[in-house]
Length: 173
Image (cartoon, rainbow, N blue to C red):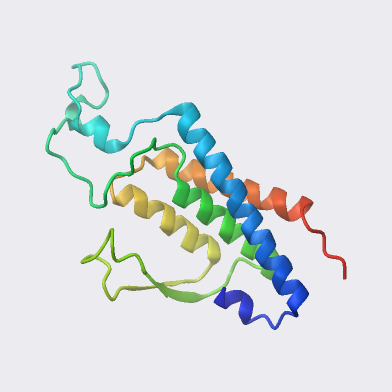
């Protein structure tokens, strides 16, 4: 929101920009949760903690006491919602601002899931896509997603934003 407010847009363009971002987010939610419940991919915690057969590719990582850094959500892994939403938002903002290279600094407002680790932490980015990639990777580092959940979520989110930008709410001015 801060990035858009600095653009000096009139009310109509502000409304259009927010609508396009909202449409891409809504479509990202639909696609993400359709994938999650259609494909039903297990979370890393389940794979690591569950008793496995010797030929299972996760057998060497088996640990019934392993815990994630952040709480594991109660729904399937693929595709990562954070990655899909972040990919869609970053790409839509890049379309609207006509550039991806936007420097900004942010902080983690989520002090529920990460209360001690992120308190007072600020992150600086040189591009919108860099921020999206880090947001998605955070779910891998937190132990709740596989790499494919992240990379595919980012890819799908970007495709969603491209489609919404090209087809929804054409600029009338």
